[in-house]
Length: 372
Ligand SMILES: Cc1ncc(COP(=O)(O)O)c(C=O)c1O
Image 1 (cartoon, helix red, strand yellow):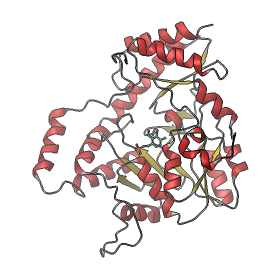
Image 2 (cartoon, rainbow, N blue to C red; image 1 turned 90 degrees about the vertical axis):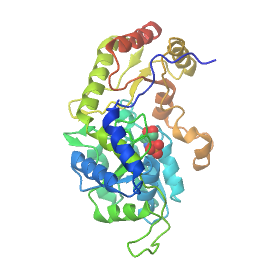
Image 3 (cartoon, rainbow, N blue to C red; image 1 turned 45 degrees about the vertical axis):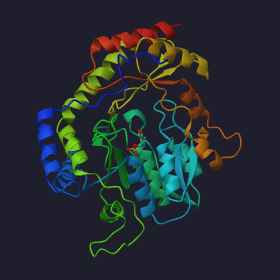
Image 4 (cartoon, helix red, strand yellow; image 1 turned 45 degrees about the horizontal axis):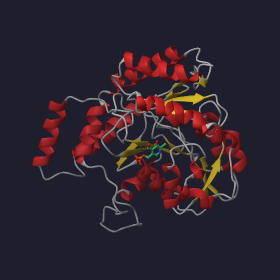
C-alpha cells in the first residue's frame, strides 16, 4: 500500500475561487464554451508577457509540437535529447518523422549542441531541444547550428515558462516554442498548451491546424487536429497568468532554500545556478553521486515515500529505453550522459507556497541518505 501523501510533488497555484468561479459560471450560462473571448485574451496576455508576436493556445504541449512539426511538411529525422519527458518523441512520431536521440550535457541534462551538430544529416528536418526542469537549453549554440544548416529549431518549453536565457525569456527562441499548461507546470489551465512564435506562417498554420486544418472559407486545407483550448481552460490559464510574478518569486525562493539546505551534502550534485540564466524551477532535481546505482536511488525514494513525500525520478529511463521508441534505435543503443543522469535523478516537491519547514524536512532526508 502507498503511504499517505503529506507533501505533494506539485500543486497548482491557488487562485481566488470567487473571481474564477464567477467567470466560469458566466461562460457556463452562455452559448460560447469554445472559440470565444477568453482564449483570445489568454493568447494576447501570453504573447505580451513573453514578448513574442504570436501565441496560439492548443489542447496540450504534445499537440502543439505535433502541429509545428507537421507544418514543416517534410519527411525525415528530428534530433531530440535522449534524456527528457518522452512526449517530445511522441510528437515527432505522430508527425510521421523519425526521432534521432542525442546525448545531453551533464550539468543541466539539456541537449548537447556538440552532439546535435554531429547528428545533423541530409535527413534532418528539425532540431528539438527541451528545457529540462526549467533550465534553458544552450540557445546561442543551437540557433547557430540551426542557421548554419538551415534546419528549423523548435523548442519544447513545456517546463520553462518564465525561464530567462541571457536576459531573454523562453518563448522567442528558434522558429517556435511550445509550453504545457498541465497541472504540474508553471502556468496551468488544468490541461492545455501554447505555441509561441514570431513567424506569421507558422502561427497561421497552427491556428488552422488546431481546428482540423480548416480555412476561413470552411474548406479543410490540410488534415489538421482538433486541439483547441476551451473557454473554461482559458479562464483558468488567464487568471493564473495574472499571478505569474508571485508564482515565479515563490518557486525561486523555495528552490534557493533547497540549494541552501542541501549545501555541503557530499553525495549529491545540483544543476549550477549560473549568472547567464534564470530558471523557472518547474521541477527540482537532485542527482545522486552513485555511479549508475538505481537501487540506491530507489532506497532514497522509498524513504521519502515512507515520510509522506511524493518525489519522482524524472526522467527515468532515458527516452529511447521506453518500449514505444526502441524501434528507432539499434540494439544496445546507449548515450552515456543520458544513462547516468536518468539513473541518478530524483525530483523533489516544489510548488508555489510550499513551506520552508517542508523543504527542510525533505532536505534532511536527502542528507541522511546521501552524506558520505
Ligand atoms: C518536456 C515536456 N514535453 C511535453 C510534455 C507534455 O505536455 P502535455 O501534457 O501538455 O502534452 C511535458 C509534460 O510534462 C513535458 O515536460
